[in-house]
Length: 251
Length: 258
Image (cartoon, rainbow over all chains, first blue to last red; front, side):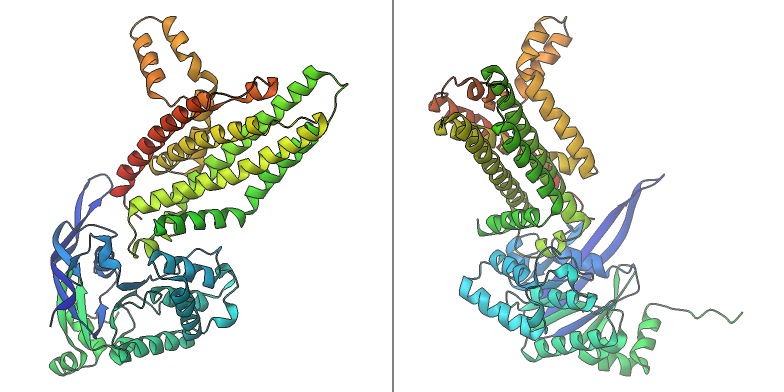
């Protein structure tokens, strides 16, 4: 089966600023593949390279070395993003628009016909439970509501692959549960989901496989059950072992 | 093209939902109506002078609206990070620049139409004289000039750090071109080498925005400029706008989004 998300020896180096200019590696030869219909959790401590990987996949930054492909197309070509949906970690949307206007704008970018756009907007606003607030400006929404607008915009083109960057970050337990339900529903519909997260419980619940990255290198990739069985510990322990966490001695 | 028009629509929507735009817009409209409709001792010289002032106000306001709008487009996308979900769609940076350009240019055109309509109605109702073709030509030439200014400002917004710096620098540059542009060759002749060559080079490089200024003709009722000349001026402006947009794209293409 062909991978719909694939990275080959992906390397990214950032230029460092300061007294001594140089480069700092953010990704060191990352090889990753995600197959159709999978839900893959992308785990790692802060600064491990999760967001950098997502930024390369979305074409925001070019790789220093190696390559990344979506549906077999190099991510540097805009057409590679035709069949994907992206939910950023924070709510980066035009706050002077209403939810309906925002979705219509993105529908236009994907070239959806007017009637199809209307239908998708209705369906999505119902899915994310924003139907009563569809005519309100986004700046008047709560954080949870803004995150749900984000989910709706990520689904406007009925994508085959969803890339979610910490989708439950900063949400209350109810908001988190709703996001989890939506991911679960997408999984049931056969969509492929690739998401970064710090919520190990959430990853354990919804993911088929997890990829653990640390200091720009892939440390583990496999089924949650297999990793747990292999390390004879829960996912949190597995994660801490893999990233090499050493508990501090008691003071 | 669909993406470009969708982006242009967002620029216009943002503009009419922002309060600061209305302040300048309403202020200019009110001053134009007030000044344009007042009769000062029935002296034609004073009437012409007031008309000239109204047109100057229209020029300054249109320039301010255009520069202020264009200067904040791309920096705001980066600062608010709305550029991320946008570029995660099948959208290129070139399309973002073109969408912003057309949005700002159309918005400045809408503001300009309203200003000219106010001006034409107030002066026309006072003088019972309606030189519609003259007004249309003045509007078109000014709008074409604003296209060059929009493209220049977008380039400035990529180069300079803050939108406020872009607005200040671009306003000074555009005002400088409008006031001094046509005199630069004369200034060059009165200077020794190598300053003469430097000034001449500037004279031949800068876009001569003053070519699009027909206020004097309008105030003194000197009639229309040949439409063929207007067409050539439009081509001249299109070449400069295209050049500035190309430079904007080259600067933005590899620019970090953070």
